[in-house]
Image (cartoon, rainbow, N blue to C red; front, side, top):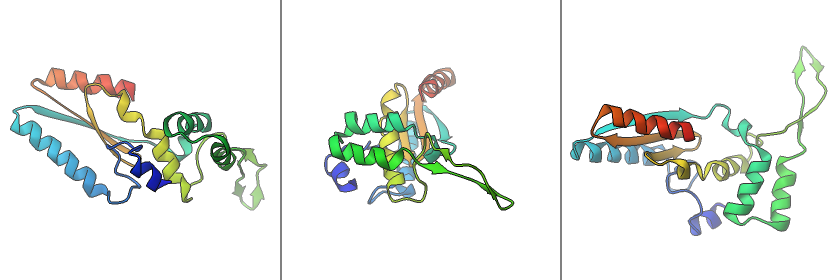
Length: 166
């Protein structure tokens, strides 16, 4: 699946996480390059660092499956397979030797699974499209949004406006 996504340039160019030949160093180099370019142009730089809390647990199954269909062309039997993989799962807790009754998991993907990181990438792949005044750099669930401006007021306004969209 990764090969298909990479060969067809379906993953955001801004995402470095869970991808072959990409690492945290890729994101760091992109960040530094952006900062140096802004300095060379006499501009102020601003960055906001975002980390999605419980990222793998926050994935809405309906939205994920819709994105897989609409954005990545995963349909029919293949989409049904993914649907069966993420839906109708249950979990229970054991406290002091007593097990709770099972509860259906309504969002999230299995952590520690091979598919978990891929499904997360598919879920957030379109995040950069909502940004108008900033440039994103993503590494898995860590996102940085950058902007440059001549004044601190413009810098702050650009960051705040795009932050509201995220």
